Image 1 (spheres, helix red, strand yellow):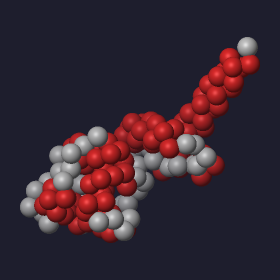
Image 2 (cartoon, rainbow, N blue to C red):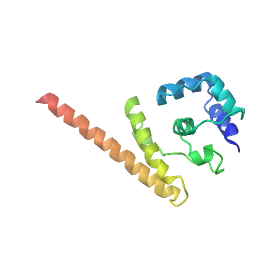
Image 3 (cartoon, one colour):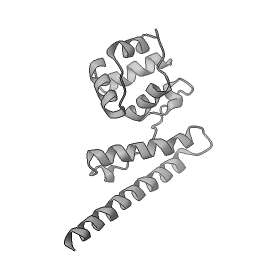
Image 4 (cartoon, rainbow, N blue to C red):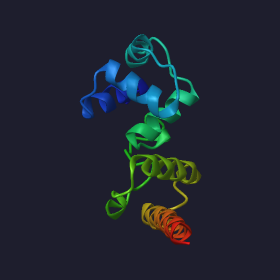
Length: 144
């Protein structure tokens, strides 16, 4: 499948209009994407640059290799442990960014999906543990 078709399919799967997708990507990743840019990408009249492709990969949690058509295997960019869903919005964005930065090391097939999931789960747990420790430290400072 071509990138243009993948971009359109991902947007449809999330049931987003072009305007809604623009708003979300611009807000989350501090970009300046317009509806006409998305239209040109989805119609194959232009191609998104690496910054925009990276934002798509993060937002849709999809491997860049799939996004640009290098593989037909639709793999997540990172795995979110459902137990960590209790994080607030800012922490969730921080965690997703951390996972995205580390998931880029696994873009080839030299590491099994199972090992990737184990590593990223451990990374999430470490992130959550650090957040918990910092929260406890703040509580202790308030008590003093």
